[in-house]
Image 1 (cartoon, rainbow, N blue to C red):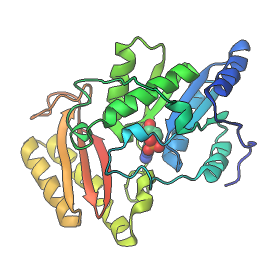
Image 2 (cartoon, rainbow, N blue to C red; image 1 turned 90 degrees about the vertical axis):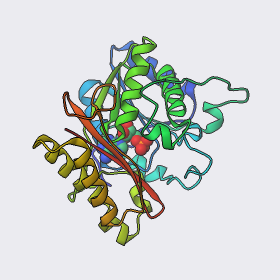
Image 3 (cartoon, rainbow, N blue to C red; image 1 turned 135 degrees about the horizontal axis):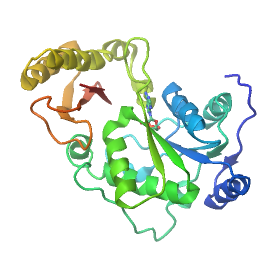
Amino acid sequence: MTGSHALPPVARRVSEVRARVAEWRKTGLSVALVPTMGALHDGHLTLVRTALKAADRAVVSIFVNPTQFGPNEDFAAYPRTEDADLAKLASVGASLLFAPTVAEMYPQGFSTAITVAGVSEGLCGATRPGHFSGVATVVTKLLQQVQPDVAAFGEKDYQQLQVLRRLVRDLDMPVAILGVPTVREADGLALSSRNAYLSAEERAVAPALQRALADAAAAMTGGMPVAAALDAARAAILGAGFAAIDYLELRAADGLAPLTEVDRPARILVAARLGRTRLIDNLAV
Ligand code: AMP
């Protein structure tokens, strides 16, 4: 990818990030953080663009965080494409890539975990035990390391966004959380690093997930009972060729309380298996 910016510098150590940020702070610049696991796509780059509208400098972290993967999940197989990622970060003017090793993040003796109750439970928290504790812990560390004014996260991972909003509120962290709308392919499929796992046949089926959410949202808005709209969406997803649905639920947009009626701003959230790939998506109602 060509861009008008030089490749951003890469920091591997917390001390290097701190030194860079301290230089910026000296001249009064504000700082944003965009945490990622790499294999960057336009969703991530949109987070960086949004971050750079809110702050003078954007630190992007790439860290495939072992503590948020379950024992039978794809930690080892997760795509790692740092050279391509760096070129993409240059194209959007990211200021610094922070790409620490596992040993830098979790040195010998590391013993602390952050757990956010309530909003972490159910949905992905039910199918991925320990996942949100891993996320909350690593994001707390990144926020401590970088000490940004703002941090940007995607609505693609809607429950994660809610968990992190709760986390910074509960721990009085002096950072503004920016939620960024989901960036999609032309056919509606939410961009995801895991889309790379899909075969051509699976890729053709994948947009059915978003279509089912859109149809259910329209049906609920049109007065169809929530349970009936969710049943129709389940049938559409399985009928399109998905192997299984981990969950498909209507929740309150703020705080994720389960809903049986659309009596406040709501969100339909889904996780489903397409072959061996687990896809998630969500949509406002
Ligand atoms: P990941 O690398 O998958 O951990 O994602 C890093 C950040 O990018 C998270 O805040 C995600 O919610 C966000 N993100 C991932 N996919 C998208 C997308 N399609 N649109 C917007 N943000 C996204």
